[in-house]
Image (cartoon, rainbow, N blue to C red; front, side, top):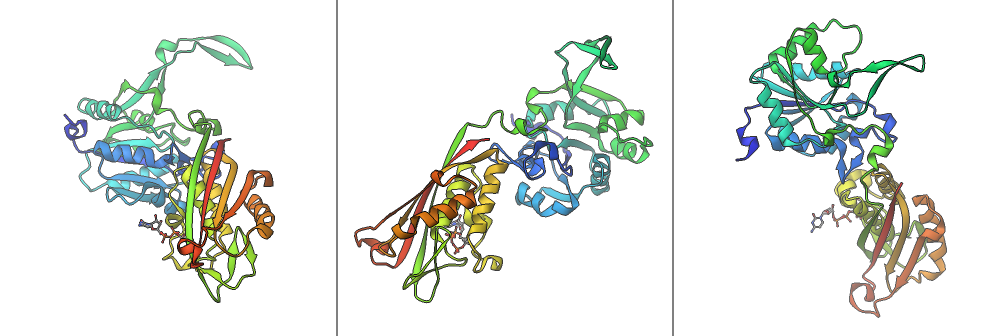
Length: 382
Ligand SMILES: C[C@@](CO)(OP(=O)(O)O)[C@H](O)COP(=O)(O)OP(=O)(O)OC[C@H]1O[C@@H](n2ccc(N)nc2=O)[C@H](O)[C@@H]1O
């Protein structure tokens, strides 16, 4: 039987308002790519698939757009502004849910991307008998009490558990507890808030896969050492247009027409880089229907693609570009293109190959109606 179908109705809150600088991903870690999509997207999708409705995502107030982009268009997901602290984000999200008849709520940290349906089911079931339930794991290492840098006794690990999220609560209990919280210091988690209000908190089995992504190396431990991507683009040749190829302006009887500067060579490289980390294609990031890209220089598209490769935990290894056209001759401009592309990619010129070929006057390129370009990119785990 489908587990989601067996669960009673519940809402979810995903706290994603932190800065996450320790992960050094260039963006807050909840928006960094991990296993092919933003960290935040993983648990939001898992909660939606488990039946959570709605899923409230508390994101930084100045990154609401990034949060919407990260979670995609899902009618069951609502993005709200988080607060200055995790607790403020949770309290505000609970207030957003108030009055909607919500009886159960899961509260989850976005930095824990792997969320298993069986953990959700265990947590929701525990609410039949307690006001709160949290997933925990035993401590396997021996523990010591430290004092001034020295061992000051042994701690009984049997009495200690490692706590994870999501944490499940009867809505009325946790909502009241957050508003009653007197603690000057920020509560470590929501179970402590409920416990301080006298609520009972049950322990259920957690899962090692629910680990929190905190440091840069957390983003790399399972990444394949290398990934490749390919890109292909075409643009029409037209009189009165400028000809930009490989980031270089070339004098020619015709130029390329398009929404941007139509640099078909850079576009192929952009798609190869985006493809290497599964980040869509150039048109999803820079829609030709979006007026802001009218006449845009394509080097900014390449810079954006390199940023996404970096955020995914990779750096550019090498790129191999082939320009397909009868004219102009690419040879005289090859090294200028290689130099400009290497500069944009942040790699040595030796990592950039620029080739050219005619199609023996065959097809649209042979009739000089347009220029095509294809590229392959290798990215290497940082
Ligand atoms: C660089 C930009 C800047 O706006 O414009 P140009 O200067 O090339 O015109 C665009 O990003 C250039 O996007 P590009 O992807 O080459 O344009 P198109 O071929 O028209 O595709 C636009 C979008 O439609 C999608 N698409 C395209 C063809 C197709 N049969 N189905 C699709 O879903 C693609 O995934 C792409 O995201």
